[in-house]
Amino acid sequence: MSEAPYLDLSPSLRVLGTAHVARSSVEAVRHHIEAFEPDVVAVELCPTRHEALRSDRRLDREGLLKVVKEGKAPLVLLQSLLAAEQRRMGLSEGEQPGAELLAAVQEAEARGLTVELVDRDIQTTLRRAWRTMRMRERARLLWALIAEEDEEDDALDIETMLGDGDLLSDLLDELRTISPGAGSVLIDERDAYIAEKVRRLEARGRVLVVVGAGHLRGIAQRLDGEQGPEVTDLEPLERLPQRGVARKAMPWVLPLAVLGLVAWNLSRGSVEEVVTLLTVWTAANAVLAALGCLIARGHPLAVLTAALASPITSLNPTLAAGWFAGYVQMRVVEPTAEDLTTFLRLERVGDFWSNRAGRVLLVTALSNLGSMAGAWVAAGSYAGWLTL
Image 1 (cartoon, rainbow, N blue to C red):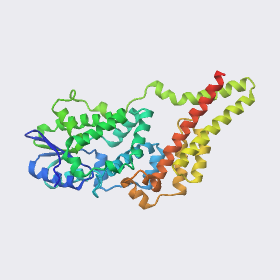
Image 2 (image 1 turned 135 degrees about the vertical axis):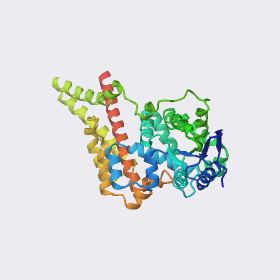
Image 3 (image 1 turned 120 degrees about the horizontal axis):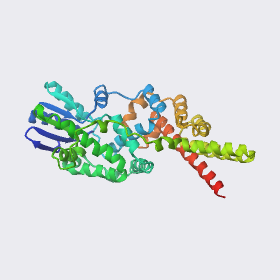
Image 4 (image 1 turned 90 degrees about the vertical axis):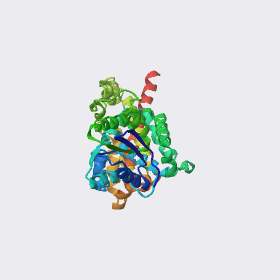
């Protein structure tokens, strides 16, 4: 059995660090439940992830369509890329991510112990991370995940990862360097959230806490009071960041400015100027949205859809060209049952392009990104004309 790192913070509180895709961590969980004899087993799971693990739930066609329609493609891609990064580092031993957490739940239930799910809801975490990140941070994070795909020399074995409790923490610190916004939400906030949940369990007897090894140090420091004040109110960490009036209005500024320019030129009788404005707007949006779809290796009909939809959807922030392109991609190159089943187990970034379900999400996200770029390119051209 791998010597998984653990800390005894008191005679009645033990925190065990695991690797989420290691078979040895499953064995370690069972060993510590037997050896420590806890009254409560607290696991780094939320009800959503717990249900998904217990039912071995996979992405289905309806779920994929819902992701496209609700504009969640970037979030699902981010979650999948992070999971693929774990596997790229050599952590996969044939176990699905979170297998040791499910083993902790099952072992505790078999012994009649109390099980507590102490992690924040995964959708809340991802949405908070995405909204907190600046556009530059999003690009840097995605690029870091994609660019490191071929760096095989960085692969680490399970014994190395779990043998040094600080190694995984250092890797998470690297995430903070790449994207401070994402690091704060994915790491610091969850450490604080889990620590407070655990603190509320201490009066109920001996508690064994099972968390990813990368969170071991942060959670322990918070429970010991070494890192910041106690978080007694979890409600602020459970809600999505509220956008201010300026951020809510921002998506409408560009469309209104374009329509204002058109109206102003029409009032002056400058028909040629109007034609030029609309031509530049249409060309910039269509070309860059189509380019994004092409990078995602979208079907020609999806590329055409992105090109046709972008000039219109860019004038209406409630719509997105990628939604239409993704839907067309899904209809003309429908993911097979195998595509849907294996999507959440992809091991390399390149697999996202060969997997039909992954390609639907890429078409959706990259078409939207191209459409957004096209709108700003057109706006830049307008600004240049106005300064002449």
